[in-house]
Image (cartoon, rainbow, N blue to C red; front, side, top):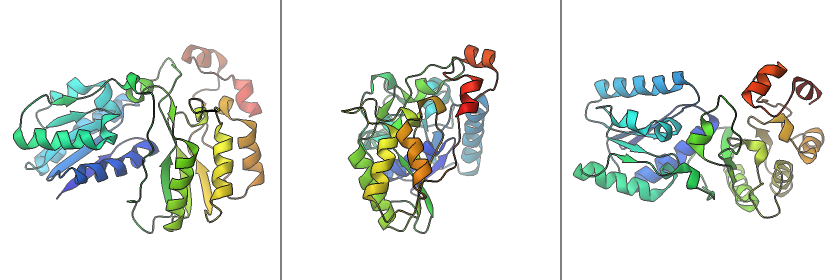
Length: 279
């Protein structure tokens, strides 16, 4: 075994696991299991802990590294587990330098076990081109956004992902084109708060603009799909694209959370029941 990545949680984690695998292997890690964790619920964190214990029992010689949202928000808890050799932060996991440092740490067994930087200090998002998805997969993911500027009452995700930041449109189009040319029929655009896409980019393009650019410049793409969106942030160009272009799949997962106005207010959600129904 060289590097094995076990993914918990969302589609964004599934995409990022491909980057993690590539960077960890390039850093020369071996006999290493990487847990890309989720923090969206207590159950998700518990599942990661259970998996770590089980893996160590079954493969005692493997080295275990924990990263992802739960590692970012509860680094100390994972570091206190005897089964865990290293804890890497959620932004750090996307950087080759972090994995090279991890190899050095694991090989010499020295230094700080926790390598978690301040996620709120991350202001930009470098594009990560993926060409390592298994051939023949009809559906693959492309990350276009990360983080969230909202602070819903119940949600820990901004503290695991940081503030909202977007991948420049040109880089997204290049990634989609590359994957389409490799035979992947369907691309899913994914992010933490997908409909906030572009607010941090020059000219503040909306998600609808990005979708239009992909459909226009990658004619060989058969299907484009969106992951979860916030209905109150959906722009008119996005709605027009759903109506006008048959390649954009008309299936939306809406982050509604509740249909009761009082609960929505207490949650600090940005939509009302009436607005949800109207959408």
